[in-house]
Image (cartoon, rainbow, N blue to C red; front, side, top):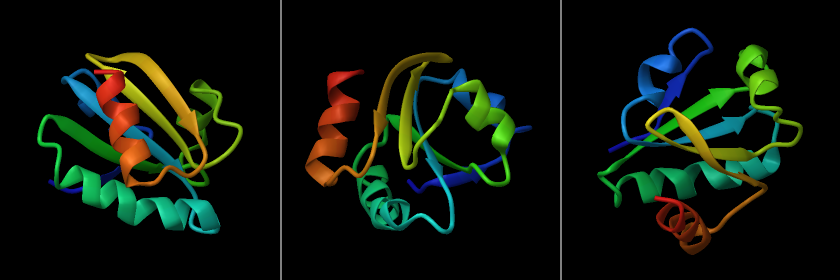
Length: 103
């Protein structure tokens, strides 16, 4: 699996289907650049989770909706409902634990 980049208009097409991890990022954000390959690795190991990323500079409607104040912010959804939120860099083990503990 891989991480799909989405925008404000298409995000809802993905949120209602099972477990979804949404990564809020910006191109200028150092910790976001560090987190991106970690998310990519975990996406290849977890087939039952959809991994999405959204650029806050291009999609501020969604960032405002979920009150994203700092990046990177990860939001985990289950069947369209927000179930957990994490702010800041996570290593691979921390990211997997975040997802698994909230399934």
